[in-house]
Length: 256
Ligand SMILES: Cc1cc2nc3c(=O)[nH]c(=O)nc-3n(C[C@H](O)[C@H](O)[C@H](O)COP(=O)(O)OP(=O)(O)OC[C@H]3O[C@@H](n4cnc5c(N)ncnc54)[C@H](O)[C@@H]3O)c2cc1C
Image 1 (cartoon, rainbow, N blue to C red):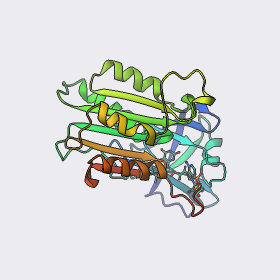
Image 2 (cartoon, helix red, strand yellow):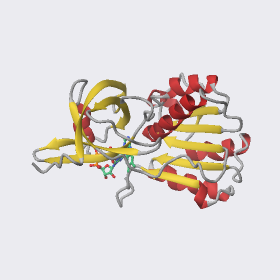
Image 3 (cartoon, protein in one colour):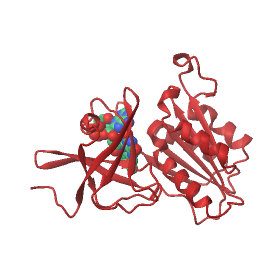
């Protein structure tokens, strides 16, 4: 068997939610607990003969939850996501025993403001961070913490975590959630913010007082959004070291 048991374990799917034709989340319960920090990713896979086809996925759940949650986008021509898409509650998948990644909340600079910017599934690590902060905040008051989550999707039903993040932002004054829809003509009932991240980023930095001297920015998801947003933030005065990024895929040379 080419799958070393010391590296992988199996996990059962306990829940699945479908949000759009190509967007869904699952919760899994591995045999052994996975240690991770909010913002980190796990490596998930399925067995293909004797090999594991595997990819990285940011963890949505908090380490304080028993189950682990992921939010996926189907890439129809992809190697793994069409296989993951077939899996239902009760099925198993493979998960590496070690979570990885340095896309963590900045706890070193002393910045009290955190600007979490994502496209679609890029919200996953931010959901983990927010859920964890919410649970930690029950033990004490965050006097000067501020977390702003800006999430873009083509249409509002692609946000997936909107209801949860809106509810939490009503309960916790330190949290602001701004969903923005980039194809409002395909979502005529949408009453919220419109535009791509690049269209609205600078506006929120300024109107919410996200001063570069006291703010760390985090960019997650679409590679082009990350590249463009980095430029906008740098021109606004953010130093490179206070812009963290998690790029989900590398575009092909033809730009796709
Ligand atoms: C640290 C990290 C965390 C990640 N977290 C998540 C997550 O939480 N949820 C999630 O859905 N994905 C996440 N990804 C992306 C994931 O690892 C896979 O790349 C993705 O699921 C596609 O896998 P695949 O095998 O189906 O496609 P592949 O066979 O790997 O890719 C096929 C082609 O599609 C391109 N491609 C890959 N992903 C996309 C996409 N989303 N849109 C358009 N083109 C794409 C690739 O560049 C390639 O050209 C993460 C990636 C990294 C590096």
